[in-house]
Image (spheres, rainbow, N blue to C red):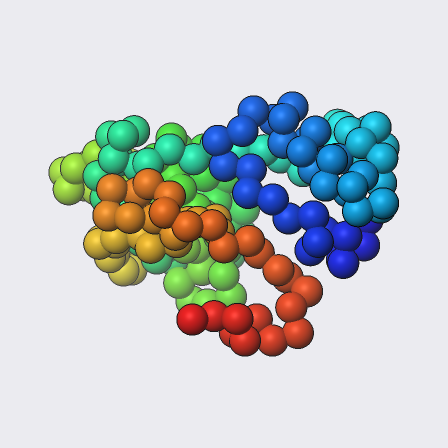
Amino acid sequence: MDVEQIRSSRIDCFGYPLGEVVDLFGQVLDAAGQQSQGVTRGFCHRLRQNGDIAFRCDVARELAGWHTMALLWLTVPDMDLRAVGHRVASWPETRMCAAVASPTNLALIVNLRSFEHLEEVLIRIATKCPGVAVTERRLLLRQVKVYGRLVDESGRCVEVIPPDPWAADPGATAG
C-alpha cells in the first residue's frame, strides 16, 4: 500500500468489530480497483502477526473510574532511566511514560481515581524508585483530543480526525 491508497481508504472504524473493519477496508480498496478484499485481509493479518499494527479500545475515562490525570516530571539518574521507565510504565494507572532529553528526563502521565490517588502514586515512586525525584506535578483538567478523537467533557468521542503523517502542511486543514 502506498500513501495515496491509505489516504483514499480511510474509514471511521469506531464501533465496528475487527473482522468487519478489515472487510470494510477491503471493500473500499476493491471498489477503487486497488486491492482485492482477500489480499487486504491477508495484508492486515500479516501486520497483526508481525506486531506492526495493534487494535485498541478506548473507554470514556470516567466510565472506567479515572476521574482525572496528573502529569509528572521526574529526574532519574541516567543509568537508571530505562529500568525506572519500565517499572513505572507497568503500573496500571500509567497512561504515558517517555524518556526525554532534559534534566527532568522522564515524563509520566497517570490516571487518577481521586486527588488522594496522586499521593499514593508519589509515595510509590519514592519507595519503589530510590534516587528518583518528582520535580514537577500538574493536574490535567480536561482532555480534548485522544488518539485522533475529539472528546466531550465526559470523555466520549464526538468527532474523528484521522491522522495524516504525510501531509505537506499539517496545519493547513486545521480549523
